[in-house]
Image (tube, rainbow, N blue to C red; front, side, top):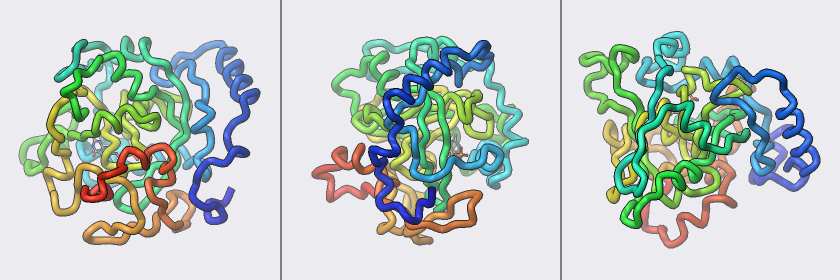
Length: 306
Ligand code: MTE
């Protein structure tokens, strides 16, 4: 399918997997004899997110062209990221919640309804790809944590361990405010689209892509999609994210995709589709407006595209 011929990227009826195909896929998945993987096991495709409107990016391309500053500032960090130790991995949920908890990644997964989704990913640097994820809706995890009414934001934190991430070593990038932190409003986090990925391409999440679990909010620039999460905190104040702390004149809290709002140093009008050599027009909310535009009603004064 050629994305250049499509308008808006909204998934048309003809592109949504039919119910019968959906259930057939479920049967195929259920019928698989052995599923040795953890983060990618027993998933069926969510029919709402079965087609991203452009082809899935080549797996090798996707797993070897990354932003993961804990392992360096280039895109070629996949070898260095093999130093990431993902077993054991515990996740803490704390802050303004009725049910704070710390649990092992595998135990968290057992509690979550795992599914597959195909999402477009748009980096603030104006490149894009399509990722076939496995994981669970962030709202399901939030339901388990039972946030209090005072909780207005969700703050996510990546590990901070210079022993397994050379980028975090004091001195190397000592001005970087480790650990990597990101934030969403509780309403954004509860949106259908907010996804915790635990697998990609039918396998456990590669280390370069943020194993064992990372966020993906496909209507926002990619820096919001924090990798290798160890802590999720419910807070009253808007969290300061990693890139905001480094350069607040260039990166904001909201970071919703908008081709008409340029980055201070480059245009956001178009994006390079990785692996195709094509440059295509970018789309507001990365084409996911039907799911998220309502979140921002009445916020015209806020810099929601920055
Ligand atoms: N998460 C952490 N912990 N560290 C990072 O450097 N980079 C962000 C985001 N999450 C980053 C991160 C940016 S800028 C982007 S575009 C995406 O991860 C890239 O995800 P990918 O490498 O899977 O394409």
